[in-house]
Image (cartoon, rainbow, N blue to C red; front, side, top):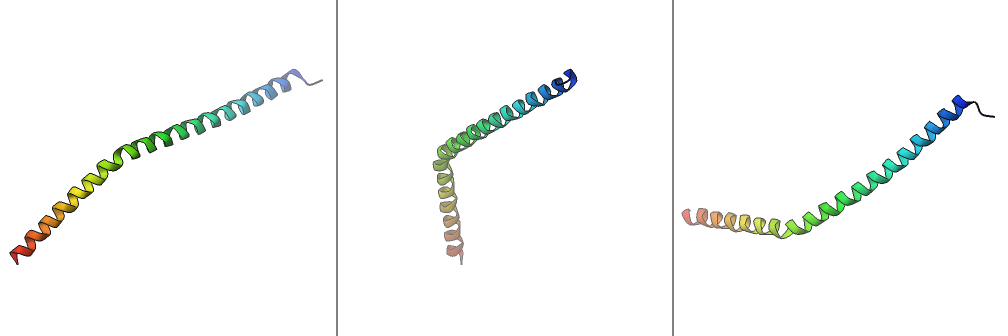
Length: 71
């Protein structure tokens, strides 16, 4: 027969292990959700970033052309 005090400690340990397993599942689910949200925003912002880069390139080339005309 297991003493009552030992039984209480054992049940607390099993509860703790169950809580840790649950927390691991929650963390994994949140990480997957965050990754999918990041992917969504990356897809959404990709054309915008490309447009900004293109505008910057055109302005840079215009400035370079102006500097060549001065010489």
